[in-house]
Image (tube, rainbow, N blue to C red; front, side, top):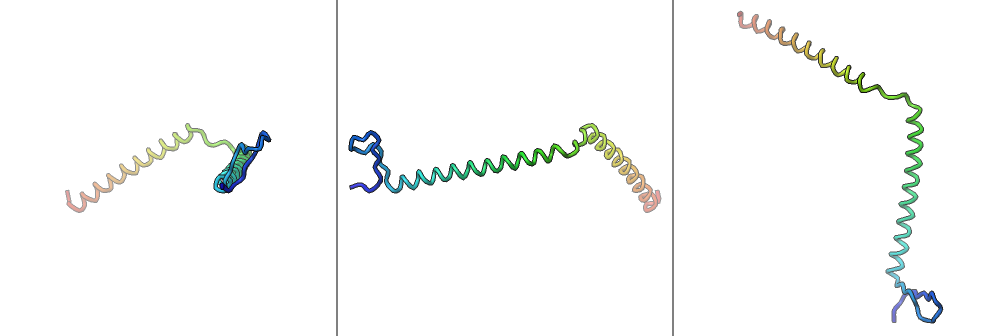
Length: 99
């Protein structure tokens, strides 16, 4: 004799669907899992909407042209510092080796 829940859908006296305990636990677990996932995603969507609204109120970021200009400026300063460093190194070598 099978232990479980039998469901008779068409009232003919014979069970149309039969669920044993393991199947019921799996079905209930699946329903709970889907429900919790839906709730978590809904909450995350609401948080994202709130963050988007906050981001809309912030000032726009600096343009790419301005950033590129700063990079070029820093590169030119670095090159100048490197040239000065090379000159100082040459002067020191001259003094040390008395060229």
